[in-house]
Length: 286
Image (tube, rainbow, N blue to C red; front, side, top):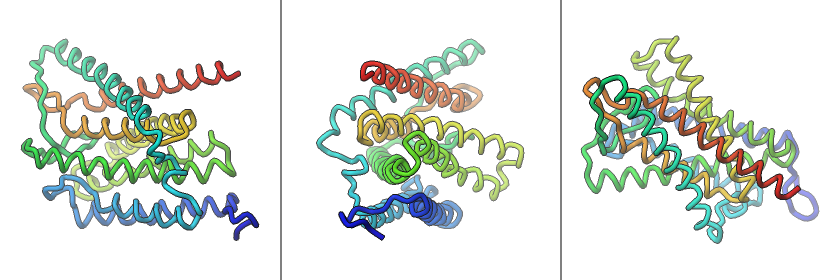
């Protein structure tokens, strides 16, 4: 149903049905790829089929709602300044978190070195290390580009754009953040299926994924509110994934032993910076 001006009706029911349908359909494809196709175990070293599928679904739903990639935040005319903001957030917060991680390991009497090679990312530790080469690096970059376009387009683009009309921005931001957190449960489900994780650990990891991914989702949603575009989140998201895939902290007792602490610190720092900037912006506008 459409109004006379041919604009879509943003009723709560229609918005909820659209978001739920897109989320479930894309999740089903994601679980099929993780459990059966297992693209991450190939030379691609990432699950990209579900992300490409998600981009296709996104384009179809945008057409149905008479929206465009530009309208949900992929405005190329506003990319450069916001790209710098996104990279600045990622680089500064991870520089601090890597430094803190290294200092803690040194304080424990361990010998620490950095390793640069490509792996998959998981909170339980880096997996499937790939020897560093130009092709591996390019595939990693391409995979992460596809990933951020799909996830930012779906969650901070489509879901936030649709939900903010009937629910308001704050509620919409929490909705997309919760969905983004549960979107990452598939990694825990896979380890449970493989028997590499017990149920108590799975519960902890599920909470960890929801909280950590949710923190970033709230932050990137706030960036959309502040800038009107997706680019800050896109480029910080890309940097976070890329650095997690490639830069590893190695000691004589293991690799990325404090990875979770590093990510928690970086995410909290990044969210804090954005919230402070948003508060300052509101004060200047009042």
